[in-house]
Structure formats: C-alpha cells, structure tokens
Length: 408
Image (cartoon, rainbow, N blue to C red; front, top):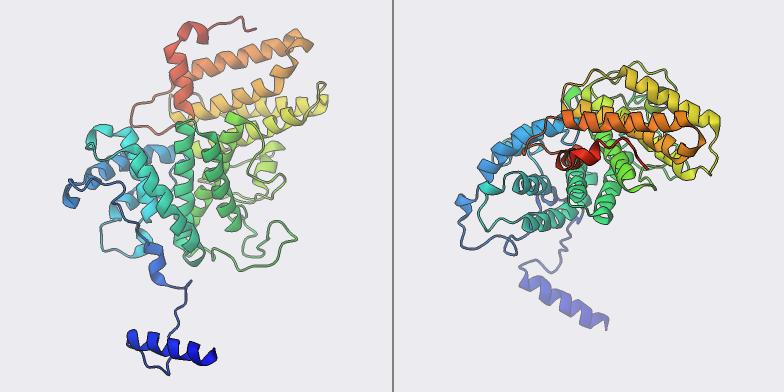
C-alpha cells in the first residue's frame, strides 16, 4: 500500500513539473490575494452589455452625494470618495472591497433606477453582495482595513433589508455587524484603550486583537463612527421589531460619541444625566436610539405594575434629552433624534394609560410631537433613510389620521 501511494505521488509531481524529492505546500490563509476574491458575474450581468458600457462611473458619482447625506445620520461612516477610487491605481487600503461596492450599487439601483439599463436589477446586485461578502468575512481577520469596510457593508445590507421589510435577513446581518464591531474592540476606544484591551465576555480565551491600534486620527475616527453606526442600527431593529437585541446587555461601552473626544462609560454616563459630550447630529441620534432601546428593554421585561422609580427615571432622562436637543430645522438627523426621544416617551408610558389622566396627556403630547416633527423632515428621493422615510410617508399619505387627537 505504501509503495502504491509513493508511486502515485511521484506521478502527480512529475505531471506538475516538480522535482519528485521536493514537496510544495501552500499556506491557505495568508495569501494577499484573498482580499480581492471576485465571483463570476455571468449569473447576473447580461452578456449583451459590454463591460465598458456598464454605468459604474455614473452611478458612483451619484452615490457619493447620497452617501454624504447618509453620513450625517451615521449610515455611511466611511469617506464617500472611497467609492470612486475602485478603478484607480491607489494603495489597496484606499480602495473599497468588492462587497462594499456591490452593496453601494445595490442602493444606487434603488435611488437612481433610471441610470441603469434593464440588465441591472436590484436582485442581481443583492446576489453579488451576498456572494462576495462571504469572502470578505473570511479574510477580515488578516486585513484591518477590510474589517471596517466589512462592517460598513453589513450595516448597509441590514438597512437594505429594513427598507425591504425583511426582518429575519436584516437582523441576521445586523448581528454580524455587532459581532465584528465587538470582536474588533470598537466598544472600548476610549481614553483607557492604550492601557487595557478587555476581551468580552471576560472569561473567554485570550486571542490576538483583530484590529491593531489605529495608525492615525482618521483611522481612529472611522472606527468610532463604525461602532456607533452598528449600535444605532441594532437599536433601530429593536425599535421596529422588539427584543432581543444583538448587542449583549451590560457590555462596557467606552467609545467616544461621534465627533467628540470625550469617552468613559459613554452610554451609562448619558443615562445617569452626567453627559457633557455627543451633541453632533450623529451623536444626538445615537443617544436617542440608546434611550429608546433601554425603554423597550424595560417595557418588555416589566410586569403590569411598573417600578415607579424606574419609570420616573426614564421620564426624567427623556425630559432632559428633549431639553438638550437643538430646535428643529428639518435636518433629518435632528428630526430622527426628536422623534426617537418622543417615541421613547410613548413606549415607556403607553402601557399605563389607564392609571391616570396625566399619563394619557403625556402620551398624547408625545404622539403629537412625533407627527409634527415628521412633517418638518426635508427628504428627497436621493436620501437614504429607512427609519425616517416610512414615518414621513405615512404622515404625508394620511394627514387626517396622523393628526387624530382622540387615540383609543
């Protein structure tokens, strides 16, 4: 048997042009080319459309404007210019991954359908995203740049499923984004980062960091924005479809608010009323979504009679949060922050409407503000906003029902 195996190996080596005495092995995990895995497009692209005629340049230029708007709400946290660098000869760290390009073009097919020929369908872009994303996930542990880009891809893909009303798929990709963010330590980017790197959960085996320390302030900023984009996305899913949350309860969060240098137990400091940072548009949205997530967790786990102290605490936090918000200007992030804060009031008080007239008045006033704020939102067809757009559409479609004051 052994002689047969040796003989067969020699035959294979000779066919491959190798010396029989030399064994050639390949490292399956450290190839630099793994990052640039491309799948065949034959299942999607029409063979009648020449490659040079495919409208990537046009849709990419349009997408840059849309992603700039999405960046204000935290959906797209990378520099939109990265989308136009895919065909350049610049360093690979400034180029988007294939899956990131695919999901960007997926959104482009929704926002700018008139720029695409019949051969470019939404479901085709979606298939490409899903096929290429698996390669990015596999290679992310070898490429720090790819980790952040893959989080961006998962965030945009999860928002797509929120737009498409597919909660199972959307929450699945949200959970992957949460896992990547926590695995990369993006929840602990605060002042103590250089002194300690906690592993979560604390009893897990020690493993090398997925992400090394950021090399510059720009890279650090992207990581901070990536974490808050993931947290806000998770809170949106909780708000839309209830618990459970993909973000573990009690996880330490020491990452500064977006566009802020202040860190240290960020969310707990905010909920305790001691917060002095995080007043940028994306910071306000992150705070409002965190408050709403906490309220939903409370309402889901509370019996018929709530703890008065906890209810009063949420009422105090909500009132304080509303008071800290700038006046409405129609800017989508600010409208979202106002709406989410009032929805938090609704969720915390509405189960107990029958306990007092004051409770009912509180709920009705909050509901009225939600409708008024949605009417003020300045949205147009090129704005990516799967959260604000449905509510505004409902108000615009049926104003009499939206303004109905006598709620059952």
